Length: 148
Image (cartoon, rainbow, N blue to C red):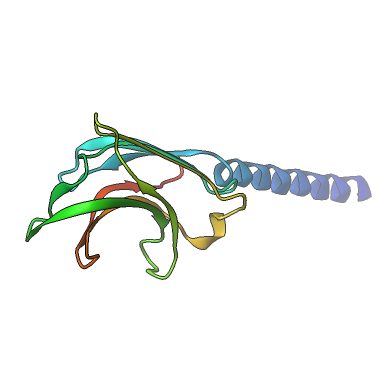
């Protein structure tokens, strides 16, 4: 009788360990997200590992200065900035870098934040275009992070 009770506890512990290990694989895995423009066209990709705090973005952007069409207005962008942020909490965002595309329009952003940022609710990577005076801005590329 004691053997059966011990066996049940042992199986329960093994099941819990398996669940925790499986959850850790998803939380610590690298997420690849396509970087989409306002029309939904893929213009690059972001690879993000929230547990390690690493972000790697490769994208195609218009050379600066660039005319940005928001759908309701146009402005001239003089700088791009990359962020990882939470779409549910506007106060949670991590600036990654200023982004300057090459003459061929290629841009890369690499950030090693050196810490676990998985508990902050971060779920998007964006590249934002800003006007010279900083009064106009627009998310030109957006990548949604979803565990795969």
